[in-house]
Length: 193
Image 1: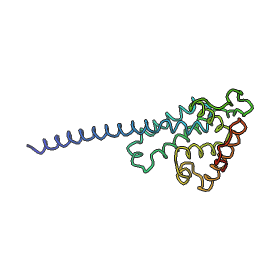
Image 2: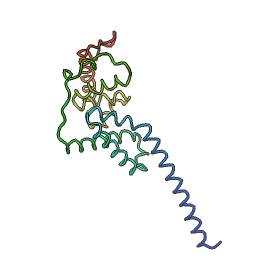
Image 3: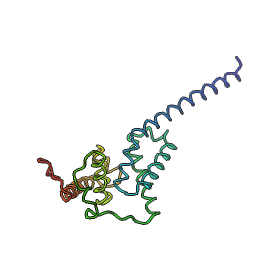
Image 4: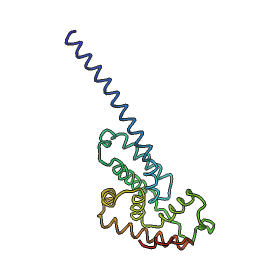
């Protein structure tokens, strides 16, 4: 075999390995999307009532993640990067639009205040209450529900650890008040913040 033939064989081999690497990258990104799409969307819905705006921001964040996936997938917490990116995309989109109005508890129809019949109704009711919180409190609360520790929430949102704890406690207190105003009772043993 001549030296020119060796170069051709090496080039063909590298191309095949590159294709396999790209296929593995695409597969890992697809799995990442499937695991985290709903989490990112729920995180943004706590901040914004406009579902279309949220969907656009989530899509843009995942498109950006796909473009940078070979780098991002090696991060310790790629989902944290995605939360930051999606939040930024939403903030930019919101600045382009006029400020939205929030619905007060008095404007919610009385039939919506009865105990939710199914988990989907309960999630929708919670989503409505989260919209009545300051945006940062709602973000902290949603990330807490998703199991993120306070120090990682602080890094994602770019705020101090103690601020995260204060926001979480205030969000719980406010949500408990909203639930009581709606006629829900606090279960025994769960009356602390």
